[in-house]
Amino acid sequence: LGPKSGPWNHLSGLQSFPGEHLFPYLSPPTALDQSEADGLEQMQTMVLGEVLKDVDTACKLLNISPDPLGWSSLQVQKWLLWTEHMYCLPRVSMLFQGLSGQDLCSLSEAQFRQHSAQFGDMLYAHLDVWRSGTWKKYITSPSTHTYCSFSVPSFFADVVCGYHNQPIHLWQFLRELLLRPHNYSHCIRWLNKEMGIFKIEDSAHVARLWGMRKNRPAMNYDKLSRSIRQYYKKGIIRKPEESRRLVYQFMHPI
DNA sequence: AATCAGGAAACAC
DNA sequence: GTGTTTCCTGATT
Image 1: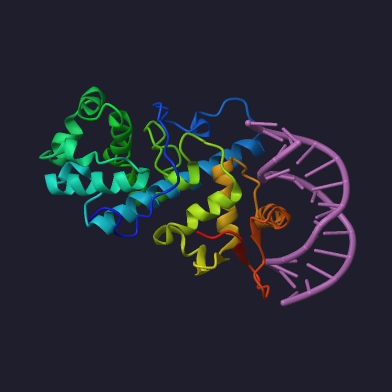
Image 2: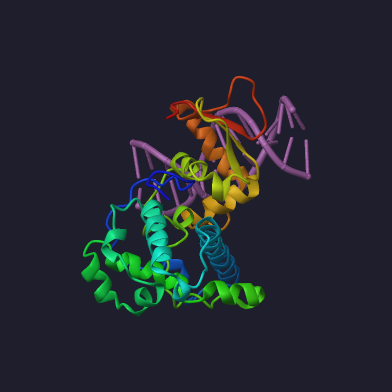
């Protein structure tokens, strides 16, 4: 697991992380009408789905158990390396050398900060997602999981939720999905990366992800595609030479 | 039936 | 003002 290797192309900039752990829309509902409440619940379920998918992805990739208590010190290093990639952190793993999963889990948030003043709280919150056993509840009772993890700090669904809800442009978001074929190639992928040509394979799913990121439960492909069309005259995205359904092209690849 | 193209207006920041 | 989001009419695949 060398740096810059493997499928974890990291995402665009992580700025500071001010310990804001819960997404605003994951807070307990207050006064909402029924349709709003439904939309929220649906969104929570989707966000959690993304969170768990990321945990699952990481476990398979790293060949580690989802339960950090069972990790060896080597597996702890793997997990830290993965997290570095995920969040574009500087080398942080060496600060936790020799710690087993059990050691790691026994550390308090303050102790995490002692290991890494800059990112300790972030790593602590990150680890909490795994430690919580959310994945277990999800696997054993997928129908009753809606609220089970929301006591747990989570900023895990990075692409979908962004880093503390930073505003993002649609074209950037699409790039982020395309940067992570391991997670998203089933719904959007490059046809020709050099020329910036990509295809949306599952329009409904991409729209749902975009809606999650922007907190717009009513987002659909009709509206998302209208936003893409606004890019035509701005020179950001266009239709390729021979227009094909669901295929677009970045006008300034890289 | 789904996607594509824009105009127009509302909306968020 | 910008960047969508929402809605809509009409054409194309």
